[in-house]
Length: 419
Image 1 (cartoon, rainbow, N blue to C red):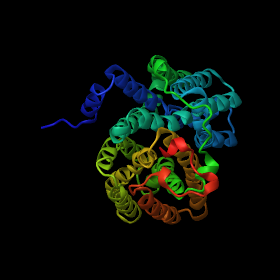
Image 2 (cartoon, rainbow, N blue to C red; image 1 turned 45 degrees about the vertical axis):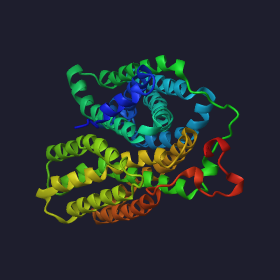
Image 3 (cartoon, rainbow, N blue to C red; image 1 turned 90 degrees about the vertical axis):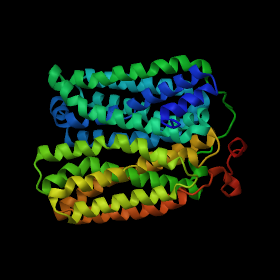
C-alpha cells in the first residue's frame, strides 16, 4: 500500500526539487509555527501571579489579554508591504528575532509598562509569521498546499499547547516566573537558525509592484467571506479558551475537573489540525467539510447547553472537532488564490479583519454573563456566530479564485496577481 502520510508526500516533493532546500523549508516552517503563539499562551497560566509581581492594574491585565488581537490585526495588515520591501525569508527571520527579543526582555523586567511594551514587540513578530507562512507555503509548495497546511497547523497547535501546559511546571521547578517565560525566547532562537541558511534562497521580488491592500480587498466579496469565516472561527476559539472552564464550574464541576476537560479540549487541537487539512485538500470544493464542522459544533454546543453536566466531555470533544474550522480557514487563504502575492494579500486582509471581529467575542460573553448570571445568551450568541460561519464558509469553500473575481475597475488586482 502506498504511504500517503504528510512526511512521505513531502519526501516525494523534495525529490522533485532540490531536496535539501525543501526539507530546510519544512523545518523552518515547523519551527517558526511552534513559536507563533508562545507569547500568548505562556502568559495566561501565570496571569494572576504576573499582575501581583508587576503591580499591574486591572486595566493593565485587560490590555495584556487584548494585545494579541491588536497585534495580529494591525501588524498583519502591513506584512505584505514589508515582505515586498525586505524579502519574505529575511522578514520571517526578522520576525523570529523580534519575537525572541520581546520574550527575553519581558522575562527580565519587573516593570508593568515595560512588560506590556515587550509583549507587544513579541506579538508583532508572531503577527508577521501568521501572514507570511501561508504565503511561503503557496510559493514553495504550490502543489502541496494541503499537506503543508497540515504540517503548519499541527506545529502551531503543538506550540500553543506546549506553552500553555509547560509554563507553570517550569515556574514551579525553577521557583521564578522570569525563567518560566524566558524559556520561550530560546525556542525562538532555535527557530531562526534555518532561516539564516534560507537567506541565500530569498525569492525574487518586484519592489515596484503596487499593493493589493486593504482598500482593494475591502471591495472583494470573496475576501470578505474568507475574513468573516476566519473571524467567526477565531471568535468561537477565544470564547472557548476564555470561558469554557467557567461554564463547566457553573455546571457543577470542580476547578480541577474543569481544568482537565479544558486540557483535553486543547490537546485535541493537534489531531484535528492533522486530519482536517488532509481531508479538505482531497477536494477542490471544501463546502462539505465546512458543513461537517458546523454540524459537529452545533451538536457539541447543544449538548453543553441542555444535556446533563456529567456528559460534558462528550460535547467538548465534538466542539473540539468543530475547531477544525481554524486549519480550514488557513487553507482557504492559499486555496482561494493562484499566486503567492494574492495569498499574501488575502492572508493579511483575512487575518487582520478576522482577528478584529474575534476580539469582541470574549468581551461580549463577559458582559452577557454579568447581566444575566447565566449562559443562555452566550449560547445564543455562539449559534448566531455559527450561522454566519456556515454562510460565509459555503461561499468561501467553493472552487473559486480571488484573482478571477470581477472587481470594480478602480481596484483591479495587480497584473502579477492575475497570472
